[in-house]
Length: 589
Image 1 (cartoon, rainbow, N blue to C red):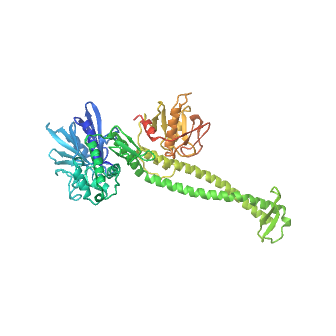
Image 2 (cartoon, rainbow, N blue to C red):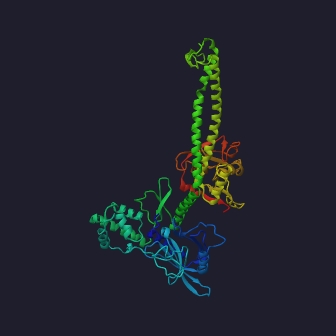
Image 3 (cartoon, rainbow, N blue to C red):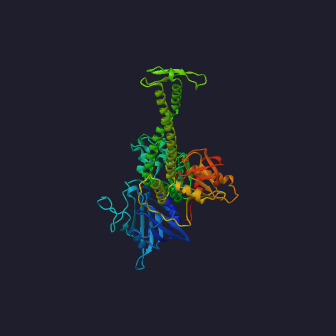
């Protein structure tokens, strides 16, 4: 991800405007490496999020309030002691390092004013949050780093704080044409690598983009650059840094072909990422980007065993299905055994003893075509006929059983695929626990203790959306929720939607008696049905819709399995941006 020194300078610029002069009301530590500071500035309540997690270290304003522990960790209690009611005097960044410093004036236990500094270092697995005195003495850090862990820098209470070694990188805001060109020409490394290893704040991603903007191949060795190429690159670099110094930032999210966020930066970099969208603030962008990334990552880790289990069951059922289809194919030829038996019975007196075959007219065919019947020479004609009747009856029983098995296998595959699809919709631990309980009750998972999350009575656990025209729309997250949503929660006058012939969530549009949804609401609800299905990234997805009164539960079927009549079909292409704009979360929260 492109959280480099330039992006950090952008964050600092936003935080300076929002936080300086504000007072710290409350301090929380939601996770072992996270902090949430509630700041009041000019009657505006702000929330500042800091995390030193190795995957996504960052600092930004947030609107998402995470559950807080009733028993705050020691580091949180220490921060409350030193920083509660403290005023934020400054927000700064040393050079273009991935470090943000909050200078805070707070009152100590004796009532005297003291200056403290809260520092977040965003450096992958070396990330940390440190509280120091005004003179740089470390009070404590969220991660303790001893001499055994790092011979270069200890982060322990009482030790002096100093910045990590920046490897003598140059300040890109102070470059001159001569120094820039002379330095590049002295290097024998690829151009893009020279940029991010020479200058503070540049990531490999933006280094590639700068080369692209200058029209210079990024793999070109620096000492082989022509004078014209060096000058072009200098001009691009200077314009870029002028924009940074003037704070002319444009928070930009980069998307892939399916409109999923893949990266971000403080400038468009359109040459490298043709598909993008801009945000009014970097904090808003970071919150959206990292929330999606971290949620998907956490859910993926916590449900890896479920996914593996489902894929194993699906593979097993696919093999069973192939066996049953082969049995049906073989058994469908059994009618010839009956014909053999009938013909041998009718012409038994004509069959020579010890014959290995018998040829006769087949009166079951239109033109009485001749047919040759294989015989067991050790059996009489009647005994051969009885043998063929036994083959026929056995094949008929096999055919019936195979069809029954195939129906059961297809039903199970539909269910397993629907659960597999629902893994993409899980967002919270409660969602994961709910799915585990479903799989335990269905016999796919061994029974074990699963924490039951208490849901307040005024909270409806389904995904909640509101159409552009103001209609309430609910979407089930798993098959149990689909059952509850459709068969118990929805009224018979509500509209029900589901992807045609595929696994997906049930969708309900809440309607008054006699009311019909307008076209806008219907299309948006159909997009939700397509998005929360196996066809999430497809176009022209067929969505069936009908009133809830036309939807019936299949007797003795697995959760979420229904039949419906009197339906119509609409074709839609899911628009993730539109769907996100309709999201209302969970009612009651």
